[in-house]
Image (cartoon, rainbow, N blue to C red; front, side, top):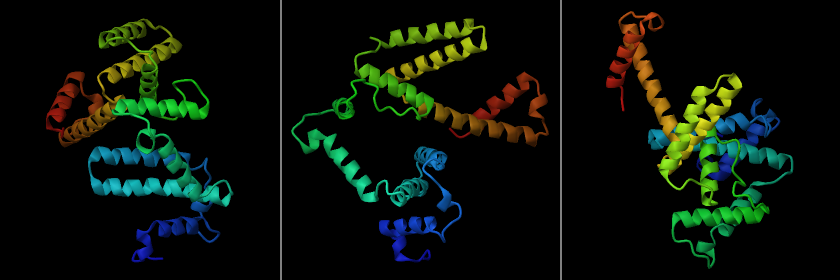
Length: 260
């Protein structure tokens, strides 16, 4: 198979490539992978898709979605080899779930707002799993900030939430004060966690995705810091030995010249 093969533009062709990579005469790396060994790559490729979405670059998004699709297909290939399940089972499972969880589209239920759809989805998920907890199904492997906000959103929909954003602010201020008073490493760890959790709750009140907000800030910091490094190098300055005032002046200069 070459890059000119028409099969490269088909799903069946891609499946054949993945199967060949896993075959006895395939790729030494691919054919020794397991569900467990692929875990970090699945997380990495998911993060790359998020980064591509942030870049608003369709060609980059296309590429990263392809990388993520490969992760899905190699897991399916491994499962098929071990006689666990096949691609058809995965397709049937998600198709049935989508129909089942959208009774307002495929049945007689009524859900006229996005919020009503989410509430209905959560209720159906709990019913299917036989678990009455509003927190059922939130994956603990989520990034910590996203996990915190998901927990709070579910708890809020279940009726456990502050009555106003002012109460959320008060809770954050109380946690900050407790963090200031923490004396041991164990206390600081606990209080810092409580503070970040309270901050994520405040983000929910402002309808801001805390994970996205922090990611955006990190990207901005990275751009500005690298520009500051370039400014320092261009002037033969050693950042590590500069007085704090000069470092801050360089930072402000880099901030003024960096892309938004």
